[in-house]
Image 1 (cartoon, rainbow, N blue to C red):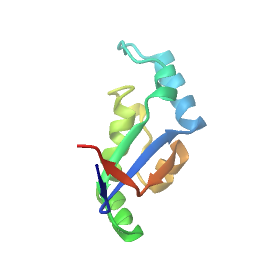
Image 2 (tube, rainbow, N blue to C red):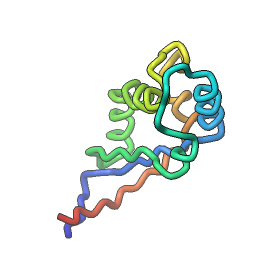
Image 3 (cartoon, helix red, strand yellow):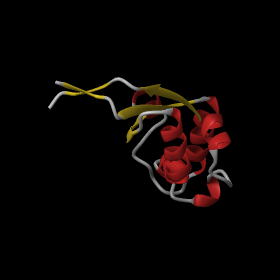
Image 4 (cartoon, rainbow, N blue to C red):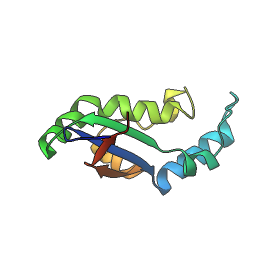
Length: 108
C-alpha cells in the first residue's frame, strides 16, 4: 500500500434541499427511473482529484464544477428544465455537504 500525497478525495453528501428536489422530480417524472430515494442515503459521489493545496482544490472546482453538478442532477432526470438554473459553488453547497480527505492510500 502506498499513501498518495498529491490526491484528495471529496465526498458529496446530499443535503435536505437535494432530497426535496429528488422527491419532487421522482413524483412528477413521466420517464421511468430505476433509482429510488433510498439510493441517495447509501450511494454518495466520491471524487478523486490531483491536489496538494486549497488553491489546487479551488482550481479543480472552477474547472469541473458545472460538470459535477450536471452529473448529479442527470442521475435523476435528463430534463434539464428541472435542474437549477445555474451551476456555481453556492448551488453546490446548497445541495451538498462536501467531505474532503487528503489522506488517500492506494491499495494496489
